[in-house]
Image (cartoon, rainbow, N blue to C red):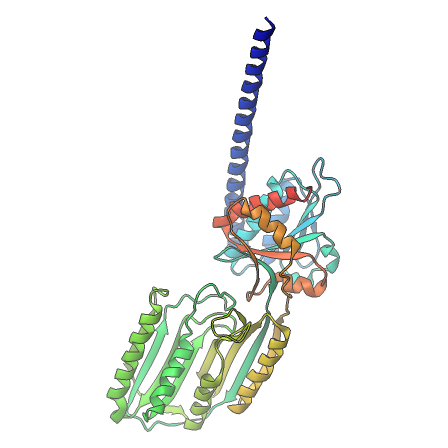
Length: 459
């Protein structure tokens, strides 16, 4: 009889364990489904509200109301910035406080909304954590440093590829200008060369090669003139802003009739080489040569020479590497993002990004010297300060450990992209912080990694 009771007891225990395991698995699946649904629902609602918003204040108001609706403490902290707080859960008393931070903007709202949705869903669905906060910043420059009292800060920023960063580059904007004069053309036939359809993107993105059509056109004209062709420039434009890779560029030139056939052949050869090199990565690339009406005026040869000389001597792309070897990782990069040679003025704008403070000073001096050499005015603007790279960041290692559970395969690096952490570093240099770049496609994995990170802080 005792043996029968023991057997029955064992069977009951096994069944109980199986049922418990089944319930846990079911609850985990339900929890995962909830997180996924919340991320996408919040994104859809927030992006729709952002599209209809008259200003960033309307976006801030929407998030404020959302947080109140979900029983979170939310405070307006000036300049449309918000602080959302969620208290510690049972048994997590005394665990480190973590602050998430993401930006919002009326422009590029679909990108901002993705990361905000991940942050909000994480705040809503986290169940095991110490005190967690979320800073939603519409104007991070106006954020008071008193809101940065936290043990850990994790910035969430949009990018096509998921990366983990513990440092970011300083950014400069260099502007070079020159007054121009025009004269009557002595040429016979006018052409317009246009390169367009390139992907573009922020010039801090080093995940792939981005061709610069402005530089390519200038190089072509320089080579034509070096071979003895007489070429006059009537107009030259490229790019849209200093800190984005140009999507297009075009030049209008007048060529001597004796050089027209040779010029057309040279352009066709350049076109073939350019397409061979880039069309596999730039599927919408167009490279066109068309005959146009001859303009009555062209730029003086001395002015055109200064512009082309600037293009020839100015660095575009990798400026310096970590050990001076061309195949090494870059520590400084530059991008000619904007060029206008129209009317009576030439303007070129360059973004210069560096992970090293000394290299930034070198770039400042050399770009100014290049402008001076070509008789141009030079102005530099500091747009983002350096967030020094911490290769031994314990916070980065802790987040990586959590993210490894979701196969993100992250390792901390420094980024050339602008990051809010650089602004926060200036406000509070001892902040323990990292930046996570990602997107809504990886939203579930990022959110679950954050939740596991919160949970692991109790260990």
